[in-house]
Amino acid sequence: MFKFLAQEWAGIGSTPQASWEDRADQKIVSPFNAYVGYNQFRFRDFLAPTQTDPEDDAMTPATMGAITATAGVRSITISAIVTTPADMWGLMVFRDIETAFNTAFDNLIGIIPYVASSPITLVDSPLEPDEYFYNFREFTKDGQISAEVGEENATVT
Image (cartoon, rainbow, N blue to C red; front, side):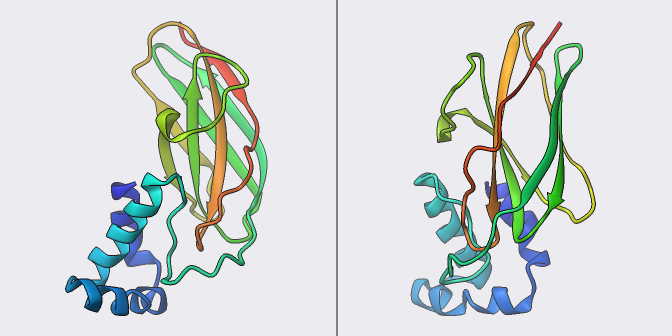
């Protein structure tokens, strides 16, 4: 999450960045540090990050299209197409070795930023030969997390 937040700070824009100034002044830190610190705190409680402070909880999750898990040698490539991005900011990827698992903080393996008109891709590697199951949850710019998108599986050789 720290990597995701640090990379996304520059791209969220000056208005969302300015919304962190009051929290930064209270903590005697920079707006960037207030943004990262608060969102890391949210993430520890399995809440999605938010671009603005305070979050407004009014945005709409995206509509996901095809999601695939393609096995390779000691790796699986996850690809997702977003059909209607709405207010999507990123996609959380979860993995387990059993089907019908619950998405949780302890099986989260990646956070992928959404880039308009690009497929979302993650290479999960290195993996031992086995069958792996993946599920996904998207999150919006204001910290809303969608329901589970749907499970995909692949078998590593």
